[in-house]
Image 1 (tube, rainbow, N blue to C red):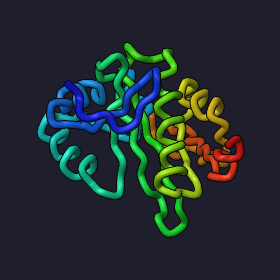
Image 2 (image 1 turned 45 degrees about the vertical axis):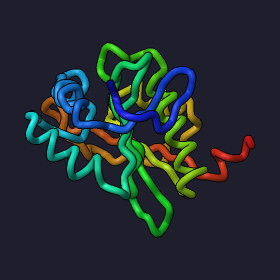
Image 3 (image 1 turned 90 degrees about the vertical axis):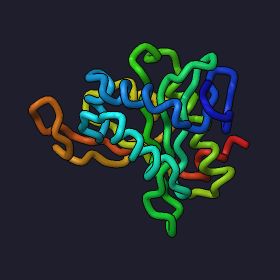
Length: 178
């Protein structure tokens, strides 16, 4: 059973990542269809996943949660400070392929973005998208993140350099509907 519920909606629950989740995380991040659009290169074995759990997931300044649908692990989402002084953070997310196209990523990103502004008093939340990841791009557009920059040929994928796109939303933009 995944960890305690931290944030939730009707569609997803975002839970604490526990040691029992490491096998799922290792298998998912090593899946070629998932890792293609991640910054992580891998391959990752269980010991490396455990080190990630101990050093990154357990870090106080980061928020790392397991995305669950109907009680089943579907992926992860994290909120990572880019510049704590300026109140800027980045969301990182991945889903197992069997959960793609169900709106879970969009809903998880909505919950974490809202959390960043309402509970952590962040000023700006950003997300990066590797060229070709149309599903990720749709998430940020649905949530009204603005395309701010294209870093030309900033990532090496599948034998070629590809662009990395940055999207972001400010607190005042996110909260203006309240």
